[in-house]
Image (tube, rainbow, N blue to C red):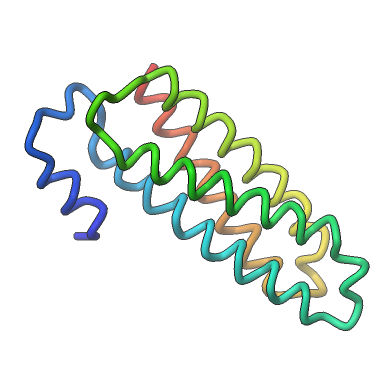
Length: 135
């Protein structure tokens, strides 16, 4: 069991009809994606051809910011607003898709971009799964 799941289980009130396993998976995927994108941006900065990776670095950093925000917002259950949750999930999906596509263009040359694209794909899917459960 992850700490995310443990914290959801420890929440003192009823979480309502939300699927706790999908919620936990999404929160975990958001934070893992943020860490992976941070590391990928840093690795890009260490490449000899860093100028060719400017767009990738930008996509990574945008994805980091949105994934962290999504993970934090989804972790807060008091005063839950489904409209805000849906909006942040859509934004996270968009950022992950953009980063995944950009990193995918460099994946054959840079292993860190391959790893990052996979983390973004996983996070995008976790957000989609949670969105489906909220509908």
